[in-house]
Image (cartoon, rainbow over all chains, first blue to last red; front, side, top):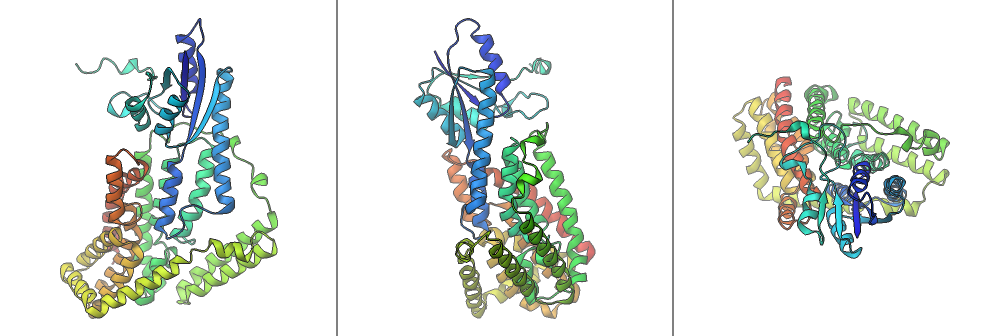
Amino acid sequence: MRVLCCLDGTNVEQVSKALRELWATQAPTLGILYVTDTGPRHDIGHIRERFLRSPSPHGPREHEMQQAEHAAAQDVLNEALHRLPNAETLQRQGRPEREIVNAAAEWRADLLILCPRAEYGGKPTIGPKSVGHVARFVLDHAPCPVLLLRPLAREQFPIDR
Amino acid sequence: MVLSNDASALILTPIVYVLVTKLRLPVLPYLFACTFIADTASFLLPVSNPINIIILSRFPLDLLTFLRLLFLPSLVLIGINIGIFFLLYRKQLKGAFEIKRLPSAEQAVKHKAYFRYTCCVLAAVAFAYVIASATQFPLSLIALSGTVLLLIGGLCWKRTSLRETAKRISWSIFGFIAGMFIVVRAIEDTGLTTVFGNWLIHLSGGTSFGAVMVGTAGSALGTNLINNVPMAVVMISALGGIQHASPVIQHGFVAATMFGCDLGPNLTTVGSLATVLWLLILRQRNVDVSGLDYFKVGVVVTPLMLLAGALTMWLLL
């Protein structure tokens, strides 16, 4: 079975724990995917156009931005490899939601694992805003079954009946 | 404050992007903070926004009057901006980051002598800006002198070349601004801007409150339709008739125009209604999200800040 795990920089522990619990005996073929979101770069481009400049910064600044993106991606994937040493790494650039579903199709994933949104601390949330736009898009467009790893939130239950 | 809003947004945004990416923090809150605060702080001084210089060249205000009318509203708005952003992004701003992911100052500064020289020139230019604003010395000469000094330093330390510098200048801006002045002058000759100006003065009801509110709303809305530079030029032409009004109303209109043109662009991504409509259409096709995120933040934050700033300004008139 081929399982593709989508990383967002904050969910490595959650994903590796789920894999250990789900496949205690026979380990699947694992892939770990990190997508560098190019949305902020487009926003920077819009800001520059507002000030009547060309859309992308020139020379060393552009190079620094690319280096920072590459270093962050490598960081996240290396962290995941510590916990999932036999996983195949995939790195993409673009709109995360689209790259995830395309990578899942290209890599022929049988199951896609991802988290509802990146967590930066605080109480886990339930309700309509608990699933981010990337996870929602993937749920709507994935070429295979999707396992959405919601954080434990039993303390927020029971909800109103 | 001294770099001007476009220099702040254009220079700081990529730097902040690199820092935030290295620290593995969510990028959008910091990106928006850079853009918004660059505009919010762009009426602390006359030099903080090229729009201020354009307007003040036609309707001069001495430095003390400028500071009296706009410095405190700017501080109020900076506080509101920070508060609203903390509220909007409170979930993403939780947690901590590892400072060791960033390079040390020694690693980041590759050429110490050039770095020191650049800092000294920028500090001197900032000081000269304040003195020039107080003495009504042409600010363009200060800016040009600073540019020449920085270019000399860059060439001496071989950090840049004339060809590279020429490539990075957006020459189209000069054409755009010159074109705008010509277009507005043509509209002015038809009498349309005078009619617009008289309508604004009539709407204000001859009161300082009306002058501030109408000036702010008019320039902020217009900025989102046609971009802030042409809007500032239109307002300069339209307000030609306020010379017959009382000094309080004149100051109210001038300060409100600067304020509306400086802060108004935060409502949409490029200060153009056409772009907003385009983004909305894309969103319907599930194509682009982050541009709409900017609009959603702007539409929450900007009207509140425009109102708070206008009220503060009126109280100081």
